[in-house]
Length: 95
Image (cartoon, rainbow, N blue to C red; front, side, top):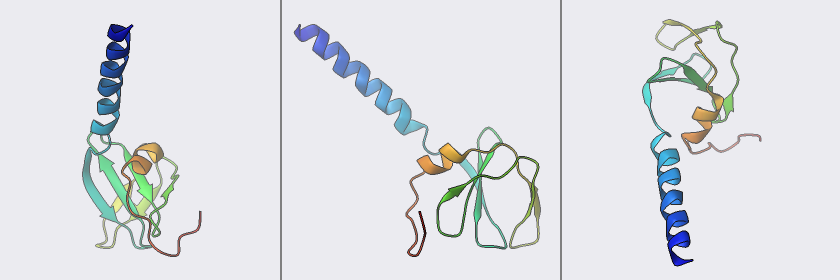
């Protein structure tokens, strides 16, 4: 019985560390003209959060403009990955 409990505990640690390790992976962050941010991940896909820090959906292929005038084309829609980054919410956001 003790061996089974230890095996379950050990496998839980492995599973939890896999989730903890996958939270980051942000290669670059772009600030858009409306105050929102786009995160580019290691695999090339992107995710977006609004100016209040809430993750939002953006259709793939949508053209966005950064504060410095660059134009980006949305690749992917990594909403869950942006949520897992765990950014602090700014005051005044509506959920």
